[in-house]
Length: 214
Image 1: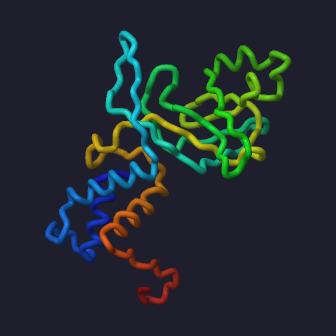
Image 2: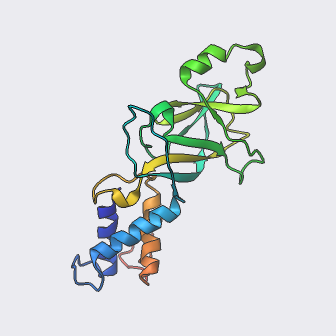
Image 3: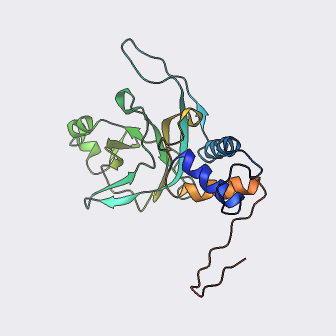
């Protein structure tokens, strides 16, 4: 999803389905509302990284928080969670800023410890760690493509987690740059912006009888 597509959908609803720019609000104003709402949903925070010599990455970075991320069983003895968005590529996998238990579904409060896959391979057979998936009492994870992988199956004890990702400042994205958010956030953004504009979205007619609900 993109800012441009979201703004266009909102403008169509706001203007009664006719994509006209003279419907009482400018498209640029809608885009600003979309950006503000996404920032609110993602609870974005400013971030400042100390660049080392030779580092080359953007300066307009933010931290976004994604809650209620499902952890599922994987490979019979492991578990994993899919990243809700693609983070900025940073050294040492810092694009995934942190992974933590969801305190709504567990009493645990520790932040999980990131390891490179090769690091876990080296230490996993050390006897105090066998089967525990922990280092110094904290669960560890590795970043494997678009997945956070836990070396043990924790999905029953911790069915949901909170992931913080480093993303580009939403306000610097173009109209058709992909937004760093899950697809199901789009409907929420549209509803929130329409609410700000004083528009109630039409109720979906779940009964196929040819009548439109109001």
